Image 1 (tube, rainbow, N blue to C red):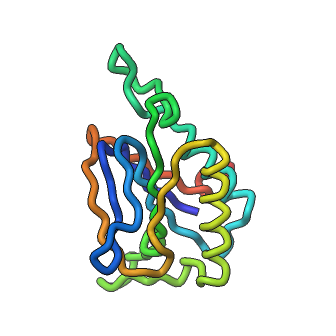
Image 2: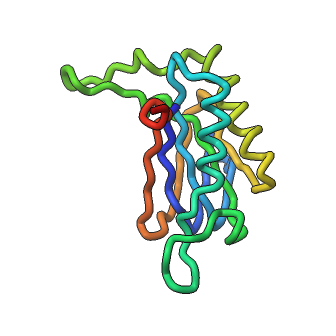
Length: 150
């Protein structure tokens, strides 16, 4: 499972001209699910994302979590995080999980994030979405459970 996390001052996702999810200060999480991901990885990654201490304290050090600053999470599914560009110029998405695998793991990730008590907004799995954000910093973090396993 892969997550691209951006610390934002605001973020929203629009589908068919209508705002579907919106947060002010918090984290925009673009989430990709791989064909061999497990529920345990969804739980682990959700806990890591929700608990990231990447907001600055009074000494301008990244010591505070989203909960510490009263932020929210906007989670957007994005299978293109598994785009393989090693050959040719057109990405191969063969490692991205098919919907029957990806949707339950995406929903499990969301449920686990909600257990933290943070406000959680979402996009819509499989929809064409327009994501608008104001990256704060900029701060962008990449996490991949395959790299974190060992």
